[in-house]
Length: 200
Image (cartoon, rainbow, N blue to C red; front, side):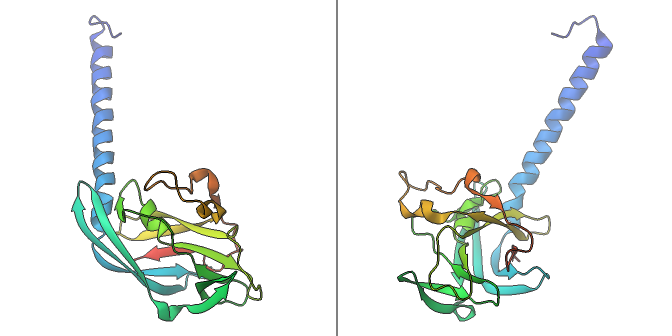
């Protein structure tokens, strides 16, 4: 407890507390405004190791209620090849060393994001990878892009590897996210064809 007799120490403590509160308010305000930068239709790109961007679809950002924004993702089917793998259809992008296939999330989503929670958009952008000559595809080889919002209003995604076998069983509660932080592992440099994803 600060003693009143120590006026200098008391004033320093009050000043420090005020500055700390101000910093917290500024940070919260900045964070809450991040999602407000996302407006209208933007293009989704997969980005290769050389920085080349491959457009694969669009995402529409609309509304701003209580710091949340609605999303609607639509892939450009012309950018993908239809394949039948492991007894089901997939939309894939072939490559000399790696084929990347889109994996639609099979359960309900609110399709709403906030500055602190971009998971609905992340779940709309799930992929699997396989070797170009592999007959089937394995849910073990999941690609999860962890998203952040840049100061310029772009959405940047860093590739993480994940086991998507957890999606085989429906979540116990509505809107539960079965893929947790513990399930994600940063992608090894040079291993993947598209180590990044960007929306702008």
